[in-house]
Image 1 (cartoon, rainbow, N blue to C red):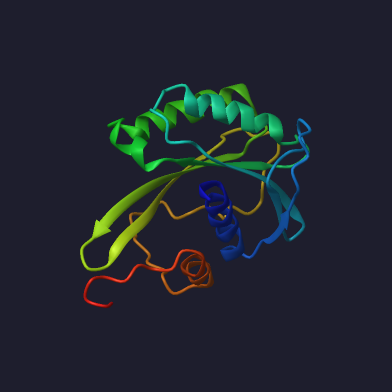
Image 2 (image 1 turned 135 degrees about the vertical axis):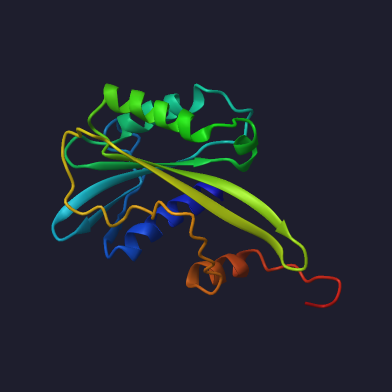
Length: 188
């Protein structure tokens, strides 16, 4: 479910920015096995999404994943990679900004195929009387010299600390249908 959630979350960012979404079946062919592509005003972006597993954090996991995902993308259009970081990892490394900045800088030096890497860090907070809140912290890194540029960067999540609660949406109604909310002991 985490992988599907991250793909839906990434697709939603593009939908909000007025892109058309085109899902793709898995091909298992190098350079053609990415998740979906988006189109807006004739510009196409290929998108690959990965949700890393909650094994013990290793400094090599993210760079290895980025290099593997890069190989799944064709070099015929700009590309975006989303990387879901498990909640358990956020407590293991104290300076995520410095680590992610170095990882993406090294990655961009080795490849011009990917225009942007967007990290989605899951953070789970228990709220007494309400339940659990999932916060997706988003951090974007843009390639300084990609092979192909994109004209519209409106899909990028805002780089602010604004917290937007969007509980009343089609997506959350779907999640609540699949996993009904638990009632509290007082009947709510």
